[in-house]
Every structure is written in structure tokens, then in C-alpha cells.
Length: 255
Length: 259
Image (cartoon, each protein chain N blue to C red):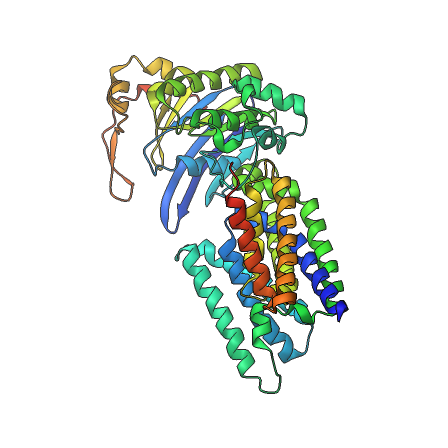
């Protein structure tokens, strides 16, 4: 068994008395791609911030491999238009070696934009710029918070492809947040469905053909809908568990 | 007589050089109202300095820092919007300063010179203070330039990359507080933010890198000081407002440049 890069146990976090996360366990193994999905307000970003060390959990344990190097790609970059900065300079803030910056840009396919002002980049280009910056630190864990936000559908697919290629080339683990399950299916090892607690998790390849999976996550053509094997009350607490046959969590790699 | 003009010029230039890069950060980080609030509170600092007979520069820096800490603490409560909070603190502290001065009949204060600056009465001591404090402010900014830029672009990204965000942000507030304390003499508490924001906004249209914008903002500020002092000298206008007006004119002129 490989040593986990990050291991969370029974994590809980509340903001002003409202539980955002309760009893969350998460283990990120080297080289593994884990996708967090869930509705708005499910605590995905909160969980990511706990992994990043940006937020302290109220309870639970967080164990981090001493070798851990995180490359972080934030949800979006809100840059003031008055700040004159080129893509080259943006990367130089993380790595002063120009050759390394150039090769990171080549990895994500936007080296032609190196002298462009950051504000002139399109949504997809900006996400790639953020991705380039996150890999500059030679991470063994990439943390991507909604990496395809503001990118058109064709661009989303190629961005997910790029992320899984990067994982192979850099040999790093990936923890990412996504709204859209269908697109990340092919590029993920484990899906964790979060709605303040972990509703279910499993290996997408092994569950994708299963009717129970389609019932759980909605059909391919419909927009992503969130189904449960239990119900939540208005506070998000579980009020009823019907015990669906849990093929997906049977495949869980958490032990 | 000529040394009055010389000291005024030296003091104005000394302040404008520092407000250039500092103003750039205030514009990039959208802290103009924050700067205003600190500036207004500096009047309270002056009142306290008079009351306790201490050095006004030190008192102003202290009050600005205390207010900055209060602001950060209140912002984390998030019960009121940030600009509402700034509006409350800004004008309450200005009012406290004005009331406190009125309650001290033993000291005669020239309120107008505090509010709008009194550049033509600066002494060689004032000039020395401006350059010493200015040198500290510039040195700090150069030393912290890269982390300052990093937190301006994305605070959480910077934190993950190992930048001590809280320390850097606190240092920026300290520099702003220092600069306000010394700029007060030149343009007064009501107009300090103008000297921070307007030259930086003017410089934006000519800059392709953050450093260019910081330096061009200093140049624009120095030009405004020269123009304002000329106006003050030859047509007898108040120096502080003339400098701010010149900065405004330069900004409008820069708008005419095609991008």
C-alpha cells in the first residue's frame, strides 16, 4: 500500500453555526485522480481549502506526507484591469527560471501567448495559464478547483484531457472539483460525491455502465442532477436512509 | 524666501516619489477607500499628539495602524459590507479628531492646514522626516515587491505557494500608514488619497509591467507637485489643492492618449 499524500479523517467544518462539512474522510494516493462533485454549497471548495491548509477544520485529523508539494489552481483569477501584467510575468512570480516557465506553457499549449497581457486571455487560455503556474512547482499533488469554469464545452473536454495527460507526465496526484460528472468520467480514478458529507464514492469505470449509477447521477443528456440514497432536510442533515444497493461504494479504495 | 519654495518642492517630490508605487498597489488592490479611512483617522492622531505632547508623525502612524487592525478584525465579522464599514470608521474618526481638537482650547490648531496641507510652511526638519520615512517605505516595498504582487494577484494562490500573506498584507498597511503620516503635511488629510490614486491611474495607460506603472506614477506625482507649486507661487493658490488639481489635469491629459 502506497503512503497517502493527504489523509483526512472525520473532518468537520462549520461557518457561523452552519455545518458545511461533517465526518468527511478522504485519502489521496500518489498518482491518483480524484474528482469531487456535488451541488452548490456542498462544501467542495471548503474541503479543498482544508486540504490546501487555507482553512482549519473544526474537528477531525489531517495527515500530510512530508514530501507533499501542492500545485494549486484556484477557481478563477479576478484580476484588476489596472494591473499591467503579462503571462510571462505572471509565471515568473512562481518560478524565476525562464526556461522552466516556457516549458510549463508548452505543456499546457499556450506558449504563443507568453507576452500577452493576462487580461487579454480568453477563459480557456486563462485556465491554462493557471494550470501552467500550478505545475511550475513540480507538485506531487495538483489541486484544481473547478478547472473548466468559464470554458466552452469543447474546451472543457480538451482541458480535462490535458489534466489527465499532465498527471501521466508529471506523475502527480490530482484532486479536482467539478460540477459536471460526464466530462470528468474518463479522466478520473475515483469520484467522490459530496453534499456536506460524503454521499458516495467509487471508481467511475466500474460503475458507469451500471443502472444504479445512472439513477444516482442522472442521465447523460440531462443536466447534472443530484440524487441520493437518502434525503436531506433543509439544514442538509440526513433524515432518511433507504439503503440502495451500493455498488459504487463497494469499490471504494479507502482501506 | 527662496528656501520656502525649495523646501516645499523637496517635500512634495519626496512624498510623490513614494506615493507612486504605493498608489499603484492601492489601485490594483482597490484600497482607495481604505486609504481614505486611514487618512481621515490621522486627524485623530494629531489631536492625540497635541494632547499628550508627543511627536505627531508617530501618533498618526500609531492611530493609522490601530485603525487598520480594527478594520481587518471587523471585516472578518462580515456583518456589514466592507465599504459601509469603511464609511463608518472613516467619518467617525474624522469627527472624533475634529471634536477632540475643539475640546482642547489651550492649543491653537490651524485646522485648514491639517485638512488641506500646508506645504509652504515645511521646515528642513519636515523635509528630513519625509525623506527618512520615504526611504524606509521604498526600501520595504522593494524588499517585498514580489510577495506584494503575488498577494495582489491571488491571495490564496500566494499562500499555497508559501508567501506569508498576513505578514505581507500587514506590512503594506504599515507602509500606507507611514506614508499618510508624512504626506499629511503636503496635501492634508482630505487629499492624501488623491495623491495616491490619481498618479497611479494616470500611469496605467503608459505601462506594460507593474514596475513601469509604479515608476511612471512617481513621475506623474512629481510633475503634479511641480505644476501645483508653480500655480501656488505665481497665482497664489493653496498648494495642496493645486497639486491634486494638477494630478487631475495630468490624468485627463493621459486619457487623450490612444491605447
